[in-house]
Structure formats: structure tokens, C-alpha cells
Length: 459
View 1 (cartoon, rainbow, N blue to C red):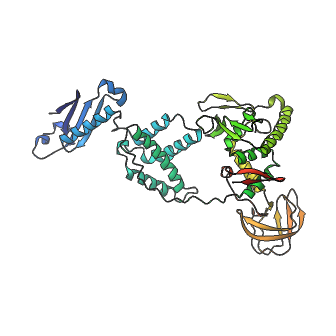
View 2: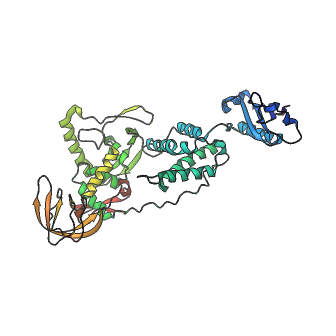
View 3: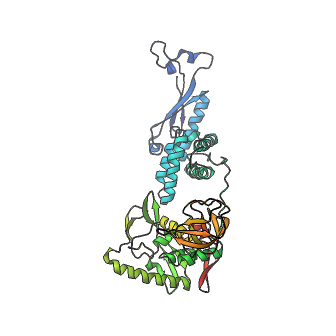
């Protein structure tokens, strides 16, 4: 017979059942098995209880169950623990899987920025749910997580872009954040991801631009329509999205202060306008006289372009973080026809400008060692002189050009003073002191100071 224990007016029922089946019907005998009354232990103990009405909204069900215990006392103890957890504010987790919890967790994160939400969603959908989704949240432990990460590494072997240690570290950060919230909300006693040892990861060394290099970049950018934007980012440390969202009404030329109230972000192939990453939702940056002068000249050029385009000059409409449409107006930096800029375009265009600093020409066809001529594309400066040859922005030799003969289009054939001592490949570059490849934000912590007619930077 089931045993009944009353705890705080909640009745817990325990009983012993087994998996024996009827020889004729094949159905499980359950608690009707005659062996349950024998002297030798047979079957397992289970428990169930009816959830009090006032706790049903918290638990999400009217009954709780547990099974697989060796004794009635063990079953009763587990039932008491589960009931205590429910009264303390924790849901019964027996049937909640890790995958369902992660989906619930992400749906409840209302203040995530688009890029962060996209990252979390990708990690859950591609990696965490397929590998850990079926594991009960209450039973998730370090061994499950370790095995999942090893699977990710093994599945990436041989792929063009495998999920390496850096990707696993980001996936782990997502899982750890979700499980931290589970602990905070009393769904778990501890975070099983806390003790997981990640694969060793050595971030690639980025060659920093020296102050002189950023000055050379800004000198090159000064010839570009968006030169003042890059100068602003180098001077004030603005992120690309903040520069794209900067407006003229936020600029106080008298005090030399620019207030950033919005930034343009890209999320899942679409654009949105969000507040800056500050608690107040606005950011103030101080501008010096040089930058104020650059912005003033930029404004005159923009006004002239807007007058030519007329009513077709429109910055665009983008959704805010709540999905409500925002009509953009007064943007400082725009496309030539007035539309808002794509932050990724700003980074890509920066690389184009940086690539041309110190560049003479790019090799347009392979040239074997021993050749006296090299075919190149458009020349950025007169080529008749000695140049360093770069491959992937690393110097590999030198050549001296004595003559340049134009070919059809923008290309040319360069005649060398001596035969090539190495094979040149299509894409190799001729230049002097070329800039290394950098992300735009890597260079945003340096401050521009004027030195004569050109710009240099001070850390």
C-alpha cells in the first residue's frame, strides 16, 4: 500500500513499483507484481504529490513526481527537497531540458543589443541545443559540457572554417551566462559550467599601428569624402556605429562638445538605431579646434550636396530597440545621396584607404624569377624608383623600376633594373612602409594632435 506523509498540509505518496510484465498481455505489472511483497528487495520506490493551488502558477503543473529510489526513505527525502525548492521559489526541474531552458532564457533577455542576441541565438541553435538540449537541466554537469566541446572540436576537423578554441570560448560564455541566471533564479544550486576547462587559446598577435602610422592613415583619409569621420573616430574614440548615428544637433561648436544619442547597428542583415553603450543612453565627447574645423568644412560640402539632391535627400527610417520606427535626420555622415551609412562599409572603406598608404601598385600577373618586367594594375604614384615587395603585407624583397609602359586600361608593364631574384605572385604589392591590416576599432584609443601641416597621433 502507498505510504502517506503530511508535510505542511501537502500529502506525499511513496510506493514501490517494478518493470515486470504480465506473461499473457505483456503489460507492466507495476505495483501489482507479487514479487514486491517478497523478502528480497524488488523494484524501485517512487513518489508523487499534489501541488498546492497557490503554487501551481509557479510550478506550472498540478502534480510532481519522482522515481528510481532504492528505499521509501530516499524517495520521501527527495520529495521533501523538491517541495522545499518549490516553496523557496524554484520550479520543479525534473522534466525541464537544457535546450528548453536556454530557449526560455534567451526569450526573457529583453535588453540585449542586436549583435549580442544574434550571437547567443547562434550559439544555442547551432551548438548548445544539438549537443546538450536533451539533457535535463537538473542533471547537467561538467562531463556533459566537456563532451559537448570535444564534439564541437571533432566536428570541425577538416572544415574550411572550423570552430576552434576562440569559438568554443564564446559558446562557453553564452552557456555560463545562461546557467548563472539559472542559479540566480534558484533553478540550480551551482553553475556546472564554472569548472569546465576550455581548450588552450592564444589570440593572434595584432601588429599595432604606431602614432606615425595613424597620422599617415589620416593624411590619406583626408582626400576621402568620409575623412572627417575617420578623424573623429581617431580623435574621440567613437565606435563606427556611433559615428554613423552622430547628428548635427548634438554638436555644440561653442563648447566643442559632441553628444552621441544614437548608434546605427546591423542585426541579422537589417539595420537598427540604438542608444550608445552607456547607462544614460547618451555620450559626450570633447572636440579640439582642428576637428571642429574639419567638421565645419564637411558640413559645407554636405549642404552643397543636399541642395543639389533636394527633396530626395533622406537619411532613412530604422527600427529602435523596441521595433518602433525612427525617422533619421541631421546625420553628420551619410551616403552621397543622403542615406545612412552601413557600419560595415565604414570598416571596409577604412581598409581600402589604409591599403593605399605607401602603395605604388599591385602585381596583376605572376612573374617568375629571372623576369625583367612585371605587370601591375593602377599606379598610385610614379613607379620609377626602388620599392619594397610585400606579400600579405610582409616584405619579401626589393625591386628597382627604370621604366613604366602603359597597357590597355589602367595597367602598366614595369621594366626592372635587374632580373627578379624571386617569383612574384598576382596580388603582391610594391610600396614603401605599407600599413599592417588592422580593425578600425583597434586604432580608436589614440588621440590626434596637429604637427605642422599633417596629422600625427599621441597615445
